[in-house]
Length: 433
Image 1 (tube, rainbow, N blue to C red):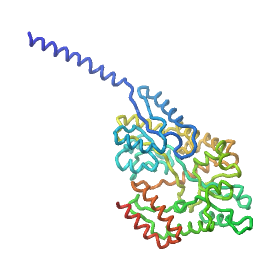
Image 2 (tube, rainbow, N blue to C red; image 1 turned 180 degrees about the vertical axis):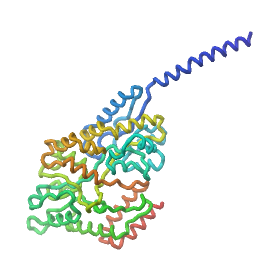
Image 3 (cartoon, rainbow, N blue to C red; image 1 turned 120 degrees about the horizontal axis):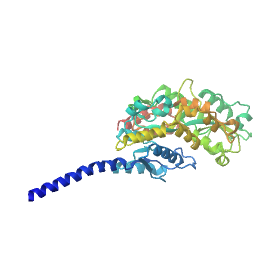
């Protein structure tokens, strides 16, 4: 009798299990899947922005409409300055978002430490990379492997005080202007205008030795960071040229405020700054006392030299929803509607060629607040086509910062010829460590 009761209990348990398994499976299948996003508030380019996360909310809404069983969430209010630490903490705790914007200067570290999912198979299967500007897609590659997709780009342009050039009878430089022409114009424009023996008008401000190196298509490193390559005739010639450019202003240190006052002809400016300070209301806070516009930076002919930052989104290597994460990443990066809305709402450039050459983008750039001196979509597309991605290796950011300090010190002492060898040795030691 006892044995019979045990059999009955076992049969009841098995029947309950048989019923529970499909119910549990159904509930698991029908319960919403959660996809977490990592994002900071405001602009990637350190300029005023009133959009906050409006674009992301729109993308999430469209994504959830196409995936009824998915809920996308993100933590709002994280500042760009606090975001890197926030993400690092999440990675250490094992609670990192499925998809996240990569902190500025952290891509090399995250890719090299295995924090980012390798995207090569997904890209080859579903994306035609020729839709992107070359420098934009390369920005998300570490050792020729894609670990992130580009979201928004921000190239450096040359801002020109049009009134100052016109008052001197100088035409606005044409596309393709060279560093030689740039030097000659700066030399011509740097002068004492009131006869008191003091230089009070200047050719340029904010143009750095790194701009000069980029304009000549030279890299400071070989083989993606395996070797420092600074002590060369090419680098020496460029730095000597740059030092001569610096000397034009004499003992006076030209400041950005001098450009604001209309006393300087040329100043490098990012696209985000141009799009922020050209129209109202920020225009009246900055450059309302003179007419100005932007063109491409001067460069050596045939060289791809436009320096450009690119914001990137990646997928956590620990995500439990790799397919959903990939589909959401594509909607951010490869979807024309998202990228067109981004160009309309943000300050940088879309990473898609089709968006930047669209009629809508042309209209955005040519709207009334920009006026006749607006940057044309054709010129901007040319600038983006000629952009170069910065090197991607783990110690690049530290090395370029150290190089900037050492070369700056050497230029100030007028000893670049004798210092380059020592600078190369020091950077090489840091590269090996």
